[in-house]
Image 1 (cartoon, rainbow, N blue to C red):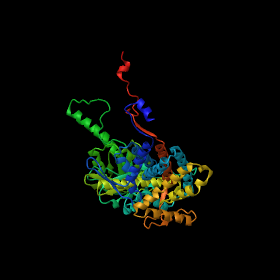
Image 2: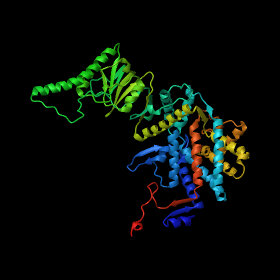
Image 3: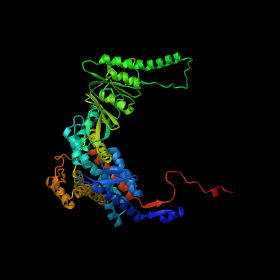
Image 4: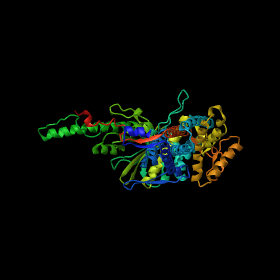
Length: 555
């Protein structure tokens, strides 16, 4: 085959047959060795340093694979697949890399003994399908419309503790669950799973105080504030009006000019321009006087500009006004506080107003923030992340993103799976003790099924290794306990190394993460197994056919 490719392109670089499998396995194992120390709550951190000296501390597999510069083509393929897992489910990136590397490693032994890779690939497909059935049997259904808060907290805690210090992870657990429950949609009439739009959770960062000061805000935090020194800095029991109306001089949309012959005409022109803007401000002031009584206050948030004279008029009336708000904030304010945004002040009604229990301003150096808090029925909220430096904030931000996806995934799936390696040990036992004895697993495919089962144990093995435990003893303890308890779901206690009921400890995994990582790892490992030649033939892939030499068209 190599000779045939050389006939087509004498300059081709070719890695053939067993060598190509060796190249793929070594790349997968190399990537596996980089990420394996980060798995689980006892995993270590990696420090990424950029070309300009930027520092990032992380143990999130998705962040590492996106930030690392990977040159090997096979390792790049695995990294892309693993980051796809993160984009789909929000977690499981490191597990995909570990399982893919281990499946190739287990298959290498049989291929080296002369077995065709296609046979092993068929065994992998059969084993994956059976493992998915085990996953469905082990999964525990929950009421997605009225879930137990403690269960959601356990899911969030399991996800966050693999990426953050326990103290900060436990603090953010409450915040993440509150955020997801705030933005989830009410149950559908047909009894389907509730949908959760995580875009409605604003993640705001402040380089201020400590990571432990991060919190959930039942409302919004805007990264801008009032622009007048006399405006109130703290208001309670507020009516909130969001608008997209210019309260400043506007340039005409077409090229035009105003001509006057004397100073009186000029003054008249200026007065009419000012009057046009002042009339709009007076409409707001009159509306405020109409709706505000008994200690109520008024907040105006405008997407367009407000000029200094208009700000002064509003400040004298005790109105808090913020200008040039971002469009995404305008949409979220209406969802958080209620009311509707207006484009004109001519027909203002009380129905247009939202309501907030507390609105206040915070100044941090040159940065100004407005907090809209204590709203009644918000459909949008904010996670306020604090930290003393940028890399601490980024680490918390990456972890919170995964925590949000984990809790939202549980609500949408309506299922959870016991964690701590419980599923992997159960699937291994089922595949080796039962499935290999069935008619579907007869013949040489059995070796592929056994390889898949052995590869699954890489997750509990690495969890035990990162916790400083004896790997073989820990795995045997779990397998023996499972046999002793007649197949009950037991996992690994990383504190003691003993088998335990991880569900009782509140260690839960996402159903969709487990399901997706089984699919992705099997497909990727199977494709890499079936590669019998790696060719670097010189043509740029994806850029169309190379131009023919000029002499073909000469003469």
